[in-house]
Structures are given as structure tokens and as C-alpha cells.
Image (cartoon, rainbow, N blue to C red; front, side, top):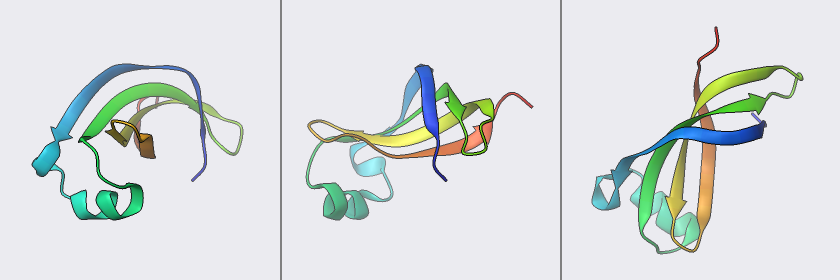
Length: 78
């Protein structure tokens, strides 16, 4: 699902770091070595149908690699 983040992310926090990330081997193969963190936060996004919604996002972040595998976990404005 493609979406566009409009505005800035808020309530950003680290969910897991280092060896406590379950998909470490996938991340290493896909993006190389680096200190990884699984993050979550809230943001306003524009969906492909044009709707603008407030959502909770989850993603992986690594030093020198940046934000990867951003996904919508739940809608907050129902």
C-alpha cells in the first residue's frame, strides 16, 4: 500500500533495538550492517484514494541507512 506522509511525525519512540529486533537477518541482507532500531510514531498520511487519515506508523531505522519499511499499523481517527 502506497501512502504519502503529510506533515511531521509525532510521539516517536523506540520499540526495540539491536538483538531484540526479530528480523535482523532480513534487515542485514537487504540494507547492510548498521545499528538498527524499530520505531513507532503517529502522523497524518494521504492514502491512494485521496483520503487524509491520522495513523500509527512502524518502521526500521539505521545509522547511515535511514528510515526503511514504513508501514501503517492502525488508523487513529475512526
